[in-house]
Image (cartoon, rainbow, N blue to C red):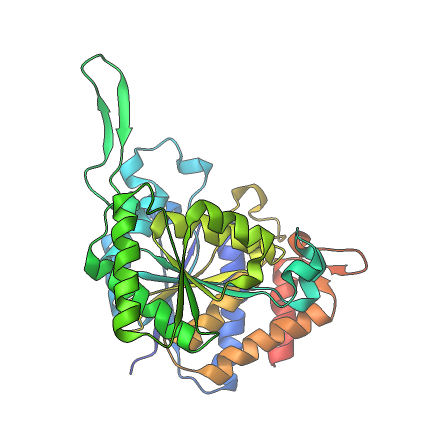
Amino acid sequence: MSKQILILAGDGIGPEIVGAAEKVLNTVNEKFNLSLTWEHGLLGGAAIDAHGEPYPAVTSEQAKKADAILLGAVGGPKWDAIERSIRPERGLLKIRSELNLFANLRPAILYPQLADASSLKPEIVAGLDILIVRELTGGIYFGQPRGIRELENGEKQGYNTDVYSESEIKRIAKVAFELAGLRGGKVCSVDKANVLEVTELWKQTVTDLQQASYSNIQLSHMYVDNAAMQLVRAPKQFDVIVTGNLFGDILSDEAAMLTGSIGMLPSASLDENGKGMYEPCHGSAPDIAGQNVANPLATILSVAMMLRYTFREEAAAKAIEDAVGQVLDQGLRTADIMSEGMTKVGTAEMGEAVVAVLA
């Protein structure tokens, strides 16, 4: 297979964190003789500035021919005043939809060195290893009709449509069950079936699939409000969580804070053939952009996910994850995970430290 990567640094802290991750990628590429090649493109605000749109045709062509995409982050106040349909975030939604990247994998793993950085007591989060499988190309973010309209009385009304078909639910549930089979063998499907018909169908479809094809996997169901509470009360009860676009967006960010910082969480968005876009779970953080203080570890760990899920290079992926652990053992911390007695470093320095361990 070809091994072509498209790198989209994006906006805000994107260029800094991606720059650090690219050095790590270059190191493992040489060390493990991976024969990976890559090029750079524009997405989000950077693309708007250069082309007048967040996902220009040239980026679309690059994305289609790539086997994997490494993304930084998009958006920022600079583009908040422009028309909604061409804001940076629309480019992100468009590339996910165009490439059919329907399965978003968000691991929430607590490195033992960061137990004190979590907002919860160490005994609650020690050993945490959750995988959130979020449906990414359907639901309320893409449902039609949507918009803002004016009613007969002159009042404005905003509206969106939350919609899922059986086939969409089955394919994301299949991903969750398959991954659970490689982990702890448990899936919790999160819905709001007592209120929303769309998630009533979700619950029934997931149940039917488990009974028909995955009887070896333990399936449970939980309403989203309870799931949000349980993630804080007793997060280690979960193995794999599968849910829709909106709920997954919220719960994965909540799970991020269990690990000490959202700056530690990578993610993968996959199509049915393993092609993927890999990105940190955090945003573009324009308030700290250009200051060399952002945490690049989520982006570096996203490179590890890319090597594992798209290129099937487990040894290289594990080497990156182990290197991150060793750097944390050295006491190096960016501002978001800093604690007493540790050594504070910047974005570039943290990336270089990971490279040094790998090399």
